[in-house]
Image (cartoon, rainbow, N blue to C red; front, side):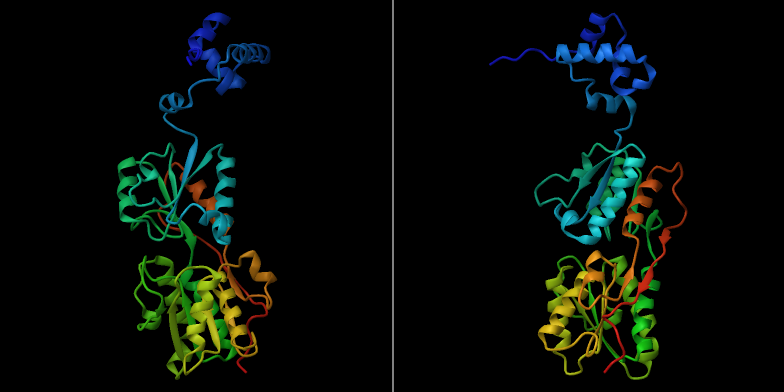
Length: 352
């Protein structure tokens, strides 16, 4: 079946006896017209079936799209399933609204498919990646659009918003050391993309591709230094992922050691909550026989039983500040590091 041709702006302008710019303003800049004139143009457009100016054509004419791209190196569902990602994305969305921009989600690309980074109609990107994949770095360089890193820089010396991961991890470790613990387990995020989970032979000096991992391992080493220098021990287990089940599996490996740790430091709250579940399955009480400290302070941390001692970081504010930096005239010369806080709850106590 044939279809009627799409009405054009020129046709509407001619029928109303106004300029094309006036018709365009009725849709895009209504404050530039008298209310009665704008209402007359919109009523005529509805009657003629004219939907308004072509948004793609407007993008090229204005030189901006009114959208921000949010890059992640995980599948799209991660942004809705992971608590820290949801909180961060909420901050990004809030700041986009304050700047009158929409939000385009740019997840990990499946093998054999084109990367959305190369074609997304956006004015700039916030990269929620640690680190950003080399292929995407090249695509962004070709796009020549502003990019702000979130949690890690997209390249050495580039601006980003994050926290002082080393200092935050140091505070968590020092808390356990002050309680008197001497034998520790550390549950790390995966050390590299595709790396095998399990005990890291290098311990707190384990090599890793990720900025946050390196900083947190260094912070744990700082906070445990006095205990380790006087005969204490620390075993690092790399988890297979970031979910509770991954934390439970890593904790089970630690709890099966001949020298069982009396305290566990986990790089994420979901890993820590999984460690508590594993301890209970092994017949251990938390914190009576095992103390556990997380990182992030997701909503479930406060309602867990026992409530989780953890490092609180401002996920929402990190996301918002990354967008605000994207809209600044000049990029900052140094990273914007937001404050963290150790929140002490019921999952930690002196060793039995």
